[in-house]
Image 1: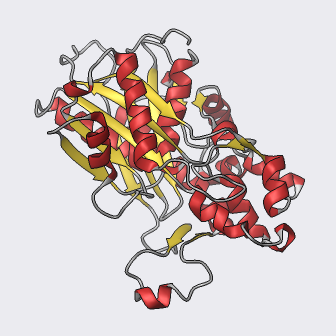
Image 2: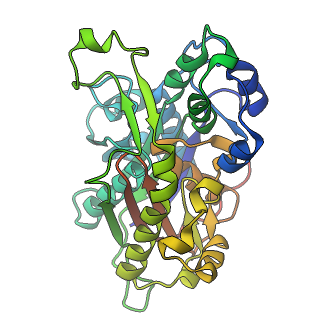
Length: 362
């Protein structure tokens, strides 16, 4: 399996921290430095909350860019795998709307409902169906629209009345979509780099969620949900994720190294949703990653958190696209995609040998 190309879509103009400070109040300097997000993109107008695009439209735009870079027509796509936790509708799934927008009358469509780990899981699912000959060409997309929940926190109110934990959520998240075109390839000889290896686990089966999106589900009667302070809400366990998140990351990293037979020194690009964030990388040594290994890992990290924020299912494909188009990821590189997700403390990892030549700059 080869990744032929990638694509990305970020809605609207970037929203800087000064804009959010005016709308929902400031964060302490140390907290703002800790999350490291300097700008993000939203599908909503931050001033009014009006929607300017949606999850399926962003996914389609990212897909079109990936197909254009691959020099492929949409009609060549046989398998479409999408991941999102914020679909336009509960049903039909986002992937079917992408199919519609691309003009595909018939196409295999599968959707993963997840956050950060979803795109990695989706890519592995597609990889397996390409490897066994079921399909030859696949399009994998991760897309997320979180801003409608964020704007609702502050619209129509006094910015200084917004609770600090809600401000942290508003500053942290962004919207976007990333896509990748995958093609089945010839079986590699024994002397070639190791084949792709995948691993995923949920480590939070006995823990309360690190992140919970409440509303719009079946946890309570609709009439009861409508009586809540907000119809939908994001709830973060900030203390829990800071303490347990590094353990999940280190567990995922060790699992991937064990399964692939790779050493940290062998990884040319480790693509993460938020690899350099201070709140994410603290306490790694306590979690089992030595200071030396941490330093080695830092040399290979590819991420773009400062520019896009935490974008859920879109995070890894957006970082992958940024790494490839900037020339950070080049042919022959051993690439590790590794995502962790706070919702129930999951990780998903996939190794790749990169083949796509760096695209020409626009």
